[in-house]
Length: 343
Ligand code: TXA
Ligand code: MG
Image (cartoon, rainbow, N blue to C red; front, side, top):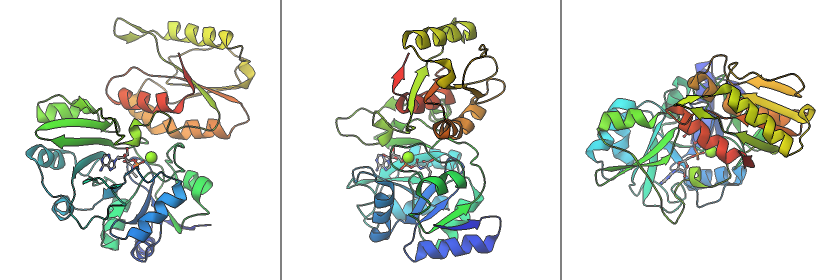
């Protein structure tokens, strides 16, 4: 089992940094989700990340840095819009894909000539990178395809026996991975929706984000099934009436789907966005992502609640979704990939 260190003590962050320096693997908190970190300049250390996660080697990693200016150490050319994004949103949940310098080993970028860079807004993560003295390559600290961890416990439960250290910094603030973008010849492409709303990026740059579509998969955000629980999960998309969610009609749709699929309510672990959605008794478990409909709350509880549902003794997870605007776009992106069926 990994060494469990509380990040409350700075000395523990130093111990974890030593493990990184020596080529080990450390799970650490960021403002989005827990990352599984290794020295990004050490090929063998990075290879261990792929092994532990069972991650396909065509799927590139994000390199985490602790100073904005370090971007010049690893990126080859920086367009004006990239500089604007960095100035405005770093540290924060925005990952930027830029042409890479040779110092970044190709295992990190899965052979791509670009590298994904991000400066997290979490003091434990920033100190860990600083003390390690190297950039840290880190995917989310979960087995490939499974729900991302938002607490140290979740990391321990899934990959705790395969890594060297878990740095426990409490629950992650956002609970949803960073937004991944690429700037190319003045255009900005969305590779993965995430914790930073695309509307904010568009406002800053004064241009629309384009949805990147290419034959070869650039981001596993683009793989169809991802972020999934082991159990069957059904997604009920909200019914929208005049731009607003119709709570009552949405719940009626939920009942219709359960009826059609002959699912016994007792076996259902039902997850609702907020208390605005009212259901009758009879479900195995009913839980809510937030009290009043608050997308930040919903995002921050999303993976944790699905994880708990997956661990429960109920055999079907039913999730009612949110409206696709702001963070709602990222939340629905994760839910659509996590579910087996959507209605
Ligand atoms: O919030 C986050 O981004 C978390 C924390 C730990 O920082 N990390 C994370 O990493 O979610 P991961 O590996 O689960 O997702 C990284 C995303 C993937 O969609 C990957 O394909 C994309 O970034 N990516 C990385 N390098 C890329 C590159 N060179 N070109 C295109 N996409 C890239
Ligand atoms: Mg991931």
